[in-house]
Image (cartoon, rainbow, N blue to C red; front, side, top):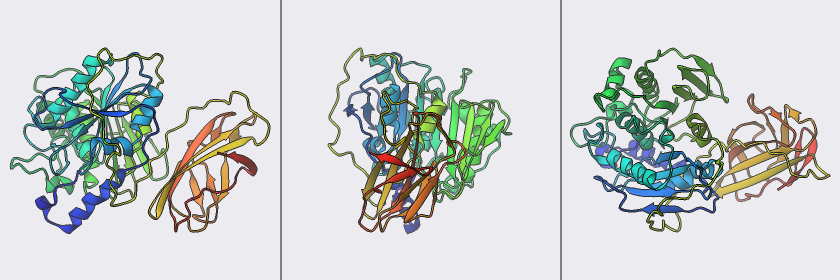
Amino acid sequence: MRPRIKLLGTALVAAALTALAAIAAPTPASAATLTQVTNFGANPSNLQMYLYVPNTVAARPGLLVAVHYCTGSGPAFYSGTQYAALADRYGYIVIYPSVTRSSKCFDVSSPQALRRDGGSDPVGIKSMVDYVRSRYAVDPNRIFATGTSSGAMMTNVLLGDYPDVFAAGAAFAGVPFGCFATTDGSEWNSQCANGQVTKTAQQWGDLVRNAYPGYTGKRPRMQVWHGTNDETLRYPNFGEEVKQWTNVQGLSQTPTFTDTPQAGYTRTRYGGSGGTAPVEAISMQGVTHNLPVDAAQAIRFFGLDAPPTTTAPPTTAPPTTPPPTTPPVPTTTPPTPYPPTPTTPAPPTTPGPGPLCRVEYTVNAWGTGLTTAIKITTYNDTGIVGWSLAFTLPAGQTITSGWNATYSPTSGAVTARNVSYNGTIAPGASVSIGFQANHTGDTSKPPFFTLNGSPCSVA
């Protein structure tokens, strides 16, 4: 979450706020449309509601509330994340709330916001959920919230205010419920932002429990993500979130499972070792506040990663207002890349003769930067254990960061090699990788690729 400049009055914070706008990424490809919904119910803070319903909806669809960052909007978060593209695959519905106050930050600090049905933004978001539930056969046990920065803070707030509504949340670069609390009307809490608010696990848990006094039902699961170099909502907030949600779940702060899902990432789970443990925390070494949002991992944590079996049309067509022709996308800095969605293995219908591998290579360029999405598919009879993809970058392109593979060198003749979790490609299956790069004008893709020395066809 980034404050309004007048609240802090420093150029340094202004720069930090602008940096998060780089969350924008390619618009999800889909035949479905993002629509604005009006008159959706109680809305004390004048939020806007945007709704994404995929063409194929599960018979009992899940519902995801995806909450934007400061200076952002619902349409920008739609176009800048993969939640809608994943909804096309898995048949769930997505709500994108949108702030209208000047800061474009969600209220996570007022006394009204920090208690159930107290007013402000959480009430409006709950109305959006109720609206969708009244028109679609939403599974009440599969309603989730996720967000980045200000949206991550709101994710914490929603799970605290409405534990009977939300089954789980995924917070990317947020702070614990109640950490940002103020009583003077300010949207910003510098002490919390700087990681200087520390409490015992019991104290943090009590803040959540006090938001809905008397509630004794099941509490939502929580997934938290944070970069160690976060300069806006500093890294100590990560540990405080873990303390809070393990206490809410009645768990020890000692992990029951620890691994390294990719280089520089440490993942700990509490109360279970599986992918839907009560609490999951991912620490991202060297990553700033402008962190990549791994939507696929959030969807996996929620258990939404199952394709729909049937199509369920709405019981009542929702009134809609067409969204902006071009959703607002921040332009002050280049977009942050997102790890590509893991691809469900699917053997080709009729493997034809010729190359035993295929590379689909998509470039998304801006200014002097670009990102790539690379899908590698193998058609051999035995699959591959341990792979390397060789290609030559056009002159002027230099890799600055990558995901799901290691890249060496960063320009010229490059070799991408598998990481620990994707080294095996079954026959007819695929793996997705990608990178961000600088360029000097040539944004074209490499002319040819070889996989473990064998030429691949190129799409």
